Length: 570
Image (cartoon, rainbow, N blue to C red; front, side, top):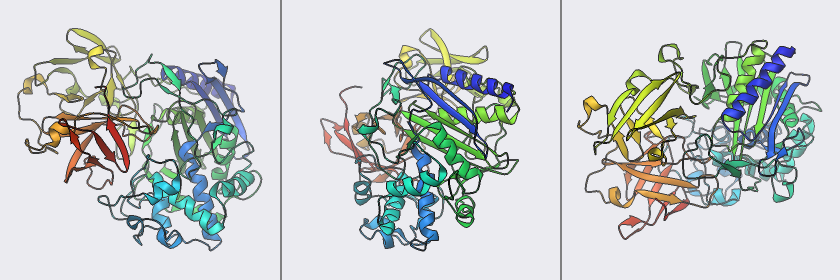
């Protein structure tokens, strides 16, 4: 490894961490033989000023799913499980929606079982599964990719049932041992707090994060769930990445036999996880999820990737067998953004280029790509920095005559409201934020024609007064239009706040942050009897049910089994 690559990679990590207020970052680059470069920067605990060290554990979140999948595939190889075996055959106690014979280990491993993403109301995996009430909407099992933590809870319970031992014990023995992950732990409890770097999150849970907003320690969430309960050092995660580079062989033994590894990386869903395309990186041809790992088709061949988001932690693993290189990133920044992926892919660009620094290696939120030079964005690709199209510039007027102007300013943009101007900053989704106090509660979103901000819509000035969109509209007399809007909160740390706003005759769900919260504004589609689908896609299974109305407003709502009460704050 050249000194220029090491210096350039360190500079990229430092600049991205500073730009996006990441408390601490641990990065490692490994080849098939061992770690070739590592870098640790920032703090393990901001409040106490404790520096992050190489031996600190950080939570890796959903990267743990790959370890769960490996144990399941070991049980398949041993003949105790079958990929096409219905989960109800292994766990006959699961509720009726999960007894569909088409919900098999294969569809669960590939996230194609049609299950909801998560059930955040209860901390225990058996309780989450036993209380599962999904199935009213969504796609038929096997038809399409829809990421589901619930599916991996089922897989972990199934592996433990046939092996006669809890999944964490199996992961420790069969994955950590042969992989050479010496310090990793398969469950997270308060007893581990002394070894863990402290997780962090924005102080304001119900408002969009802006540069300069304070960060605080996040709550320590105890977990043993097979969807994401591993904590590790960067060296541990690099050892796990070497298993992927070597086709199943770890530093101290075999984790997966060649046939099982081929099944893991070659049995693919119709699509897969979103890929963040950073400056200097070529967009992959496609992204499809395998059995517990995401597979990207690149120019060199197939690369393997997985991200992890936890309360207070974000991580990413990128393994490129064709290049013989993997990059792993662990941070104690909140897991509601792909910041770890941005760092991992930017570092990979540096090493792939022999030390060349990509354009804008800090991924500045105030710098925007030009429309004519940005990549064509296909399915599951997200280009950052994004391009703001020419149609997003100009004067936009709300229904009450309020004017909003967006204009170019240097390499970025600024927004003007009520005579005050401030820079417009992109985020990791379609949302944009600004420091203007008048626009604090919600982010701005451009939909291709006009801007929206919470309940307000701003069409172009030349089109102001035109007919409002009827997409997803309710009848004007529908009582939900008056009863549902408001601010709701729950005590789940994964998705603590949401707001329902009325835009004309439509209802929209907006969650400012949360690891399991949607990153974009979501229309609520009426299904009848006070139930709404969350999102325009008719195949998604997530729903929201309105509770009783008191004094003109819903006092609570239910989101896939997690109840939220109306908040006293606006």
